Structures are given as C-alpha cells and as structure tokens.
Image (tube, rainbow, N blue to C red; front, side):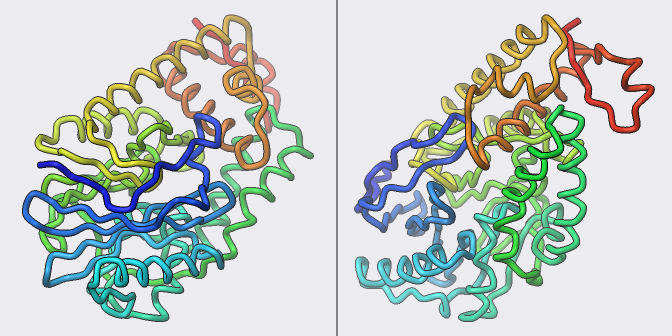
Length: 360
C-alpha cells in the first residue's frame, strides 16, 4: 500500500552522527498516514530542546484516540503539543483534542518522549502505558535521577574525564530533568500481552531499557530504535542495565524478522519506506565503528581518548553523548575479549582507576 504524507517537509540534519535531528522552523506541521486496515496516524513535530525535534503521533481507529509520546515538557514543546492537536483538527476537519484521548502510550523513558505528561494530565485522565523497564523513570523520577547520575559520574571518572570537566558534563546532564515531576502509569506495554486497539508491541532494548516499537497494521512506529538517518544512541550497561550495543543489535535483528512493514515512522526525522534496508545500514555503521575503535586501541587508550578520536570535536551535551557512545562500543568489545585493560597494576592499586584499553 502506498503511504503519502500530507503537508510534510524534510528536516535537515544539523547535528553529528550521534545526535538526533535539528529543528526547521519553516517546516509544515501536520502529516496524515492511513494504514492497510484504514486506521489513521496523524503526526506533527514539537521542539523538545534546542535543535531537538520530536515527532508526536496520534492513532485514530474510529473508536479510540491514542497519543504516542508527548515531548519534553519544556514550555515551547508544550505549546507546540497543544498547537499540533489544533492543527490536526483544523487541517483534517476532525475534532481531536487532548481531552478526547482514550490512551497515552510512551515508547521509552527518555525525557523528550515523556516529559510532557504533566501537561497532558491537565487535560485528560486517559490511562498511560509504558514498558515495565521504564516505569520507574516516569513514576519515581527523582529517585531514578539520583542513581543514574551517580552511575554516570562513576563512568566518566573511569573514562578519564577530569573532575572539572565531569562537573560541567553532569550539570548539562541534569539541567532538563527538573522539567518533569513523577507521574503514575496505569498499565504496562508487553509484547506477550494484548494492548489497546490491537496495537502490536515489540520490546527492543538498547537505546533505552524499556524501548518499544508499536505496530499499527503495516506501519511501525519505531520511536528511537530506528531513525531515518541518525544512528540511535547507546550507553554502557555500567550506567544503565538493558542498554548497551549488544542489546541494541539483538533488537535490530528482532525487528528485521517482522514481516510486512511497508512504512516506519521514527520518534525523530523522516518516514522510512525501507526499514529493513535501514536496519542493515545501521548495523554496518556499528561494525565500522567497532573496527575503528580496534584500530585506535593499537596503543592503550582511555574512553575519553577513544571518544575524541572517534567523533572529533563536539560541544555541550554532544560531548556526553560521544563519551557514552564510545563507552558502549568499548564495553561490547571488552565483553567479547577483543579489548583488554592495559594498566592492571594501576587499576588494582586505585579505588577510582582510569582504565586504558588495548586491542588483543
């Protein structure tokens, strides 16, 4: 079946290969897709943070109205979320408001996808669903931030980042977390259990522990698992369990085995008309990145060294993303015995060692 978007303009890539898309203020707002079974998916963008645009999805099957993700919760994202609903109603002559929602589905526990929940709750009591591995991110957000920030700081120290630089990076990491307050969820998204409106659920950890893709007939909402031109970000499992490159590659293979997807819609960026080909491209990029790290580690290197060699100069939050991405790939190679720690005596003698990796 042919899927043609309505009122769509591509968004340019303004960032590095490890980040998501930039914002184009001139892009038109609303798109409409129709599945093979006649269900409608509306989508529009919101700017969650500077240079970070999220795609919001509304699924309408005639009986139920389902919101998928809700932006970051910052003022501009909230305003654009409300405006997007109004634009859908105006452009397609269908009354759709936040108050009309029957369910809210959160694809994963990253704040640019769930941070708008407190705003949504001002308009509706519609039940909210998320995967169990991301439930506490939404429902016990303050506690989660304490533990996550502690593990991140430990990772950065072991990666060879100076105390002064760690302090700056942690401030960048934590700045947006105050936009959200803990919000209860009412049900869990599980691929082994029926879900709302017969939407298929695929649990695909790697980018996030509770990341899910949602299948609506022949259309797959891939969230941040597969994007049209950015390679989704990974972080080491030493920071967050059920992330890491190994989980991500396994999850790519899971979606590759799903037949009949004619269109994939990501949480950022453009629609994908060949999701299977896109999976192959992402897998190839990771293999190239792994090979490059092995080449970099012909002599002992810290993760900070590897990150600089791998991604070159980056700024602000992208420094943190680059370090985590390098760390996830180093962890993958280390787990498989292709890298070893080259400074064992230093590690043994120090309570907070900086690890230097070398290829076998």
